[in-house]
Amino acid sequence: MDFPEGQLVGLAEIAQMANVGRTVVANWRVRDLKFPRPVAELRSGPVFRLDQIERYLARRRKNMTYIVSTINLKGGVGKTTTTVALAEFLSGEFGRKVLVVDLDPQTNATTILISENRWSKLNDKGHTLATLFHDALRPDNEPEKFDLKATLQKGVSPVSAVGTVDLLPSSLDLIDVQDRLATMPSGRFYASRPVDLLHKAVRPLLPNYDYVLIDCPPNLGIVTLNGLRISNGYIIPTIPDVLSTYGIPQIQSRVADFARDIGEDIVELGIVVTKYRTGTTVHENTLARMKTDSTLPELFDEMVPEANQVASAAEHVAVSTLRQKYGYAGMFPLLRNLTEEFIKRAEASL
Image 1: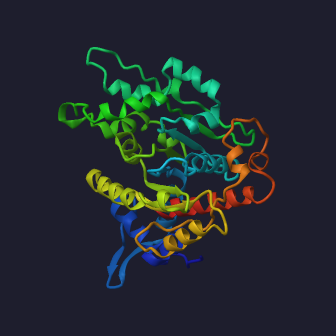
Image 2: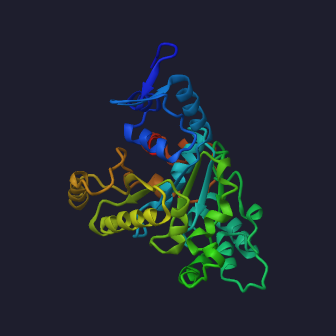
């Protein structure tokens, strides 16, 4: 859009410039202290200097880190493969710097990105996120063992073309931490709440990345809440069947309640349909219901079919390009389109 020199702009024009909705711009005004002050409050709304708005939007695009959790209460729905695919395409196709935070004790995202053998060596040394949570449960006279620098794995992914994905790996040891964290003392002045552990540990890292993707466990326990605590938004990968979609309303209500408790917005970015089988009655009927249910998050346009390329992509196999990993047929463009849609939704939500 071109504006004459010195022209003032309102919220609608700013929304057009930023390619977001007007309500998003209104949220920026409330939440971001760096948002320019209006030069006047007209009956139709506030107006701003164009040059100040242009500088603000440029800084916002440059400095924003988008932190998104991936959640479903049911396992086996493609949650981890979706997270990893988004990370790899964000890096390899869109040039974004990405941090994957693996909070799922199954460690699947970790082994996909660095191999089981490398993970085992890290786990033996305590260089996983399990150590972070174990530290919170240690007696006061014991030293902390979590080493952020040693735990952070840089330049992961077996795809040569993917060079800007880093990882904070998970561990099977997280399984026995979950319940014990619920009994953790909050510390003096409530400075050590169990849901703040991840936030306090990784906060120095976050500005180094364009995107942080958090692969959460298939529950809404304290480890998952640690992921949500630092998240701007979340996505729900799901198979379009009754069992996989049953818990979505519970996710929505629990995340909304948690967001209110911490005084932050955690935006529903949408549902990613996975392992979709065209022509299957259960899938078609569930999908039709999801599309018309206004209480559910909006579905992403791209749906990931059940395909051998996606299943085989879960193996840590060295390849040169994303086309080789995800196949030269329809899967590569589908995942690229999904990632592009993900970028638009994430960047429009803040």
